[in-house]
Length: 272
Image 1 (cartoon, rainbow, N blue to C red):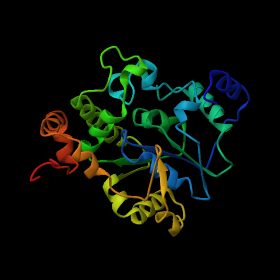
Image 2 (image 1 turned 45 degrees about the vertical axis):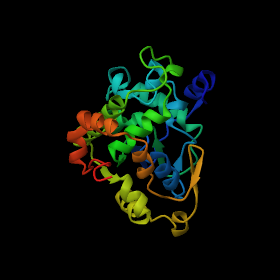
Image 3 (image 1 turned 135 degrees about the vertical axis):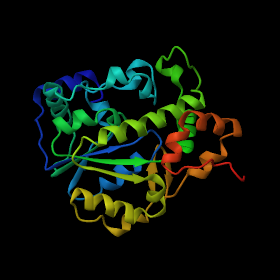
Image 4 (image 1 turned 90 degrees about the vertical axis):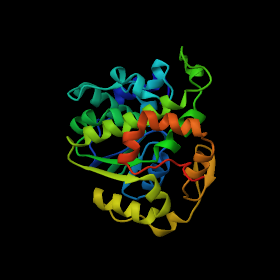
């Protein structure tokens, strides 16, 4: 299903699935979306894809298609979909249908979903949006560390993005989600920091919002593998802050200061 051949086959023979609920996890890169998806997917009433839905459909554009690895803010006009595009939505559902397990509620996590909220609200009803936001200083550091834009054909940046561009991606993600959330019926916001500190309470907030029974207690004690790293649930912000220089912090604040302040994120090196 990651190949064009598989996607074309699924578009012709897949089913136009209509679950009780569509659940979309949205957030910026490096914000805990994968772990949150993996935990929610353990619910017996929830089915999830094995990876991001954009990888299993040729009807969902990705920033990487345009040379922007982990950086949709620089090509948003090329990937944001028309909310009224029913034919595209039908193709996506048919392609996904061959991979989803038979569960009443279907969960999807693609980072580019932050761009597609109006489309998803209109075409994947009823849509439930779970937004997880993380400290922008840590997110910017993670985007810079985990990207090699030259490998995706980016003509401007070869080895890594400048930290201020990574901060722009975080700020634009938070701004767009805030703006688009005003026009959707079902939206909940949680923080990465609360999730890492008290995952039981955060997941209970989410399952209550969706209308599902709570997750079983033993999930919160086990180890999880995310992007090749196995760990219990814990806050990784301090490790990211330690990789930032004073100049990095200054540049991040210059680009995203207003958004950082609005979310309650202070200079992580102040007093260090």
